Length: 369
Image (tube, rainbow, N blue to C red):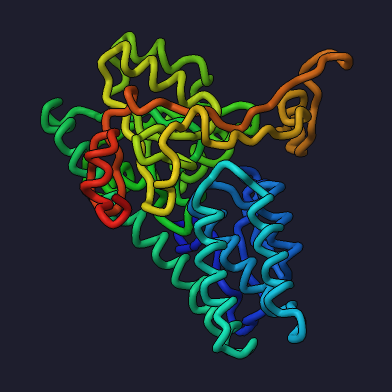
């Protein structure tokens, strides 16, 4: 997508530097647009864990490139052992999203092939990492086309009036390699001239909605308003939301979906008010080994400082961090929650749209039956 009219992907190999991966530093947004260079496995693991990159698809692509960088560092006499350790390091950075482990496992297939030399494995690793990134972008483009039909139908029913879409957290192009999942249909509709407006949840405690979703929508020229996390139900009651679209970090074969903390409450409110609730995701987000999301999906608990402190720009234009609670206050910080399938209208993937039940999901993914 575009930044100041220039097209960027969130991750790429640096031109003329095959040992360097470039990322958009999401921790600097929205006040500064910055490109960071990753030179090693350690750099990549830190970028994922500390959320310089975040979003299900992007951390999968970042992990893939991290495995490639690990192959450049691996010693010839302990190549397979070093690669195995790198895989564990990357998988431990963010446990909830399935895309990360999926990408690492795919990289292991080419990096541990016995018949190949280390140099052949490194070449295959680069090709595979680049393929994962390109596939992520293309999947998100197709998600946009499928989701476009949903928005188009609502626009027709409203006789061309604005379609109001509520989203939670950031599942736009910043969360993937390009296009995004939840916002890809929005961009597709906007590009076709359909009037769309996005209600952007701030998404405490890291404020990805405020910092990232609002920023990228503005870069594309899409109308949006930032709202407090707890305002969604109020808007739904008053007919100010036509549909909800979020992303997901892991979805079980029966349709339970883990996403940013607070998603479950939006889904319950949508069900109560008769508003369709969609989840957009690439195939790599499905975890077909799991059936019960509440019991089986690991939920990451992050540092309590994210709840106790907040970062922003002061009246002098300086970025600073401030404490928002008493000194003695303790906090807990779960990063995700699970929305049971019964609250989800449908999934939008690159393969099409399906209901949130095992039979319907498996109709799109028959190879996993």
